[in-house]
Image (cartoon, rainbow, N blue to C red; front, side):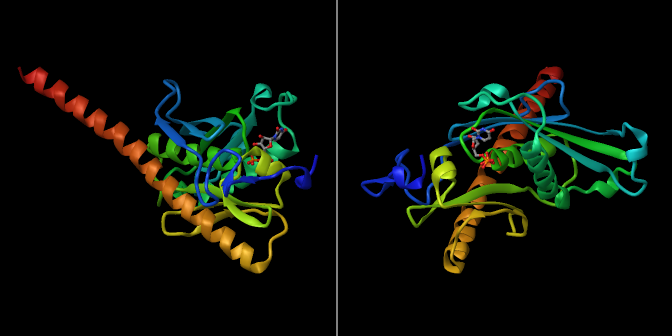
Length: 250
Ligand code: UDP
């Protein structure tokens, strides 16, 4: 099957009923894992991804230590059951690439110089995949880093734009990603500093600019949801602590 076998639009809407510039529904939960220092569960459309952050903690093996800063490790893993055709368990070329680019997307905002000789470990587990798992993973990891109390210059938010039937679309789902004409994931700070940009397929210069603009708008909307998820969790905690203090005074 190739692109010509699929019709990506019906009555001007995409296969899942979205407009071209619309994100899939997003759900973000903070602090879902008891044993991690920080964690986040995210759903972006059909993607279900969990991120766990450990550290800053001592580096093992020790020869990896950096005397002026913490090192950041990021492991992206796709569960065998996360995709239609069972994925062979364990690391492969794709997961190595995604781990590297995702780490590089987050590292610029982490204040690693605060924690010399230590490591910050980020684990991202894809439980269900529907295209855009790297962007979902980065969004979850950024929230999990904040939840772990890791000092950061800013949040990082990530979103892709794609091209199907010569139309630029936001946040491509699997059919659009696998059989479309282009895919362009980005990650950025709320100020619009881009820390990840990848592209496959073909875009004209105008389409490229349009796709970047659309992905940046998507990332800005995702930032608001990340922020809200963190504020919700911590305001509830503050409320609870306040109530406990009141009871203690009773
Ligand atoms: N995919 C799959 N099996 C694999 C790798 C990917 O079924 O071994 C699917 C999965 O739905 C994934 C999508 O193809 O989300 C797009 O994969 P890509 O490598 O473009 O990364 P992603 O868009 O998930 O960041």
